[in-house]
Image (cartoon, rainbow, N blue to C red; front, side, top):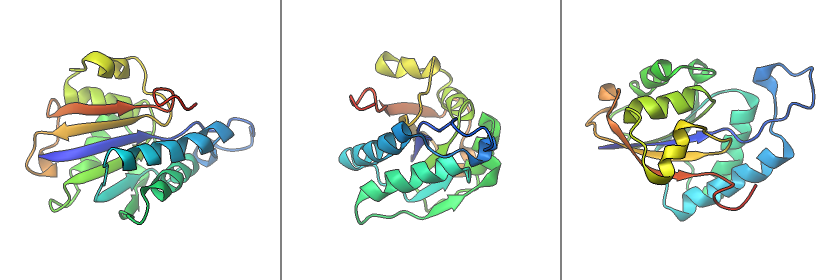
Length: 174
């Protein structure tokens, strides 16, 4: 059994048209939301052994702000350019390279790839409050998926079940 936590980057700024997409920083709302989600991860016991993060400015800022809230616990962070604007298949390929001694990964990236990954891993089986993920994966959303696999090379369609879904709005902070 493996665990995958997915954190979409927090709200980014569109205020400076001179910034290329990759260089867009977080908006003030995003700078507020990322630590909230980090505190939430700490409160529910999310302790990834590895963080894989897109190297875009907004994802790096989200990672820094959220992970600072985990207290003294600091998992190693890998910045992987292949997950910037990646499809579900590319994201799964990146996850297949995770060492098998790692049981829990936190993936920080972008939509629509993250939402597509969640739908692929669960074969769209999203019930109750998790069903909202099929319509929208908001900025700074956290999704925790239990994977019915023994090693990361086996990650694929239908192997996952969503165990937790939270957004700043659901936590009444937005």
